[in-house]
Amino acid sequence: MSFAVPTIDITPYVQGGSADEKAAVARAVDEACRTVGFMQVTGHGIPDEVIEGLKGAMDAFFLQELDAKKAYQTPPGINRGYAPPKSESLSLSLGVESASKMNDFFEAFNIGLTRDHFPGHDVAEVEFQDNVWPDVDGFETDVTTYFDEARRVARTLAGIFPDALGLPSDYFDAGLVTDTGTMRMNNYALAPGQLIELDGDLRGMGEHTDFGVVTVLWADQVKGLQVLGSDGGWYDASPADGALLVNLGDVMGRWTNDQWMSTLHRVKPPIVDGQIERRRSAAYFFSAAPETVIAPIPEILAEGEHPLYDPITVTEHTQAKLAGSRGGKRNDTVPGDAARVLSSHY
Ligand SMILES: O=C(O)CCC(=O)C(=O)O
Ligand SMILES: [Fe+2]
Image (tube, rainbow, N blue to C red; front, side, top):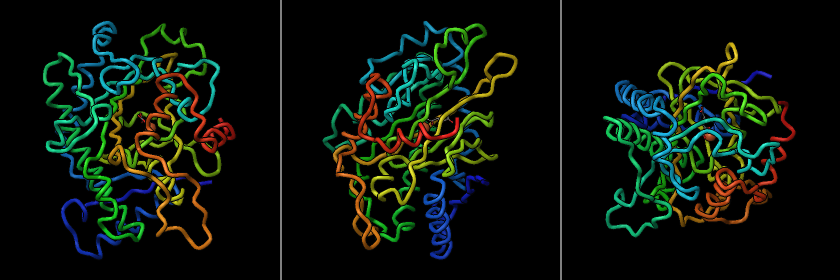
């Protein structure tokens, strides 16, 4: 099977295009979401220097000694700060038990939207925790600058989705007034000799789907990200020059009754001479307001199409996924995902 991640230039939605130009973008997005669940997005408008700033900040933080980084670790229930290698197991968020429970070797630094982003709104602290900022020159400014841009791109995409689904343009607006947003900066690297300590399958990040509406991913062009094709094979996906990778999360799958795909993916960075080729990425996870009830949208169900999901709030879904990936508790709410992983060709 040939597998390709389609490239879509979203300039008409970023800079303002004609109705025809926007309709062409919306059609391309609909097709990509139905068939792959991933796209390469160009015309996003994030300046190169903002991306350079993000890369520099990630290097300055991750290249420190482990102990210095661990000073910014937070308890498992808090999605902020530093997460050392092997502190998460993403496939448990799907309900796939692995031989060794915590064997994803990526290390990460998480930030997110806080209550300060929504003055005048009564938003719950649990979803909008304060950020933790490391004492690294320029880190907060450079990371925040990129974060704001990634959020803008995600909100732009959320504005394309109703057009692509044939819904009124403001269909999602109510749930997106207080969007939730977290960004995970990932570093896939192990010092020589550290490989030996991995007790299970060597992997950068286990098989998973993202939790939210849509993910905007900046990544190095070093191979590693693999996407599950509809034929059960895993395919490499690296960003094209200047492109961001964009993929749908579970909330979009639930809203669309799986007409759009929340696609499984994983990260297996290349190993050259027994050493992992270092790879960086930054995933901005965009989702709806925590209390938004997600259920298949009746307007888009075809005649006779049955809803595949019971209503669930954004928070309930996120908590079930996080209990798996960070707390080591297998998530039994998504039997379909687990079956897809177990039947894929490794
Ligand atoms: O590193 C990557 O390319 C993907 C990261 C990812 O899937 C995630 O952080 O959810
Ligand atoms: Fe992901």
